[in-house]
Image (cartoon, rainbow, N blue to C red; front, top):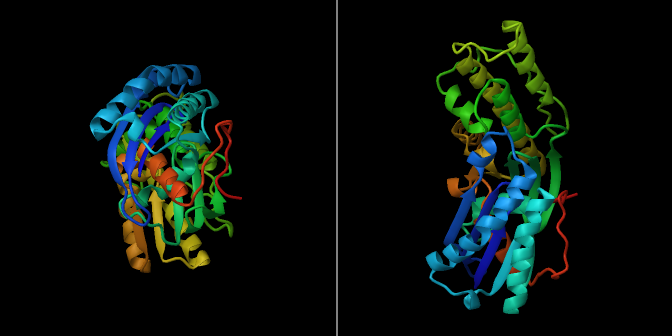
Length: 341
């Protein structure tokens, strides 16, 4: 089974080709990504019109490169897939329209994939099968806790009420005068800082729900900056590592506490961590220590599958295909597509 998938939900243009059989590990034959980070960095965030224009520019060369690297021809592809949401409407349209056109021209099925499902399933690409577990998706736009019974059967346990974890990282990074995207810059700067230097709030930590809130933490960083520098400019260089480390630790503490409690509530002994923020090594190390202490199994996606990529979309589509599911060619994108009730 050969499947070609396209991911274009935000500012990464990606194409991947996977091969696989039911219950067997999927083989990534090609995974191509054209990043737009440098393009958007000057604006301090993603510019939708610029993103969609560059998806159009990069998509065809990426498809051709993926076919070449996988050593397959277009007529050998059995199924085509694309991200249908959530994401930027103008970006989603580029990838979804291209995948539908390829499916129509080849007389092959098309599968629309939820971007978040791609993240959720990404830790299991190498295994092939997906057992019951609790999943935490942490990315720039989402912080989501799910109870997973099997692929396609998800129950939402908690989500963010305001800023997602990745969004908070980027916004705080901007406050601190760090380049976009702020997450990797904060992680790098935090390595030489003291995570106990500043006492930042752990919002909703004692709340009975599994929801998250990071806006209060972001505000606390702002107040700390203004208190220490009344003119509010770039913080003193001596403060920067401690600020980054303290902010990062506050996010980590909340994510771990909520996820461990959710696993106990759902009766699951496995936790899967995915999404761009899951690349943060301090988060991974802290999760590994906490899970080991509680006797839980922790699974994380390979680094190449954490940020937006088409291989995770292809794997999700592959599992749908094995269940006999496909999408109509007139299926529309949905920028606000939800993963679970």
